[in-house]
Image (tube, rainbow, N blue to C red; front, side, top):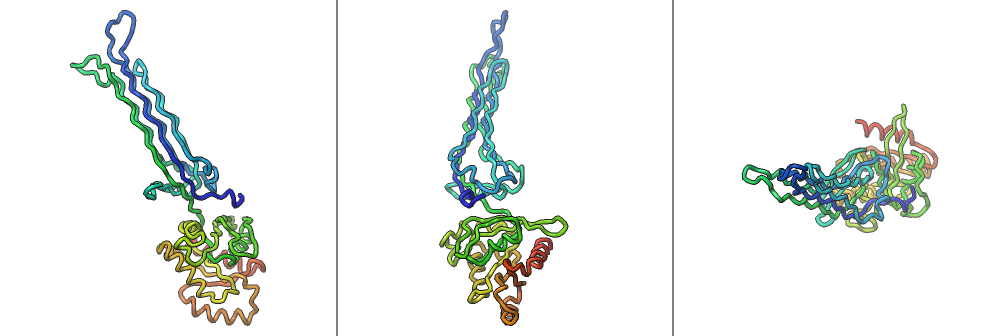
Amino acid sequence: MTEGNFVDYVKIYVASGKGGKGSSHLHREKYIDKGGPDGGDGGRGGHIILKGSKNLWTLYHLKFTKHVKAGHGGDGGSSRSTGADGEDKIIEVPLGTVVKDKYTEETLFEITEDGEEKVLAKGGKGGLGNWHFKSSTNQTPRYAQPGLQGEELDIILELKVLADVGLVGFPNAGKSTLLSVLTAAKPKIADYPFTTLKPNLGIVAYRDFQSFVIADIPGIIEGAAEGKGLGHYFLRHIERNSTLLFLVPADAPDIKKEYDVLLDELRRYNPEMLDKDRLIVVSKADMLDEELKAEMKEELDEAFKEHDYMFISSVAQQGLQELKDKLWKMLNE
């Protein structure tokens, strides 16, 4: 999947079908002059249904879909025959899709499981045929109910990537490189900021055929919580990760300060982010000799008293198994 095909935000107008009209038919048969009412009910209008699919990773297939309309219910017929139900429209979406009202931005529901179905817009109820209205005082009612109108909605579909571990860091911290060596994912990698413009997912193979999913979230910049750069666009994908891996390069001027800025951006976007498990990883450790690493450890031991940290090098393949072990332990505690 190329970057251009990753779509995580679409707006769609949906309309369910109108219910069919009830019939006001009177029974007609040879040798029977005055048959009673036998008009059937109208069929219900088609629903608009959202269905989760584990085979989808993006909303790209809905990028050019502006309107989705379900079928109308059929009208009732004679001999109490009910009209056909309108055709339902099923919209398949990736797991982690949030549905919002376009105007109020209220969250309606989320799709998180494969095969999960939610009715977004109910089809209108079919009208009752005239035989329902027969009584001792009204033997031949010549009226029936019209079908009810369907529902119309303008919605926003917003994808929040579902992953166990989210990589958090400034642009060019080495997140894509780490993802490429831990998983089979092939993110775009280059030596300049903002190489990654869309989230990348990868599956980390662990011991005994076990695995977990890791997401490379595009780099955060200062002011992201206020929407600076592509702020909210990136940050919403971190909300779903149970564990956050903060990646700070070893050549950063001040590792603790860089970590604090990242943490502050998350806090300002959504304070609940700080409740997630955190692991601080100093990347590009192959740039450090033993003496420099020892000095840095002294500073970091003081700076990160409450949180675990570790050194790794994606390029030199240093500390990667220890990193996997640590993440697996955090995910399964």
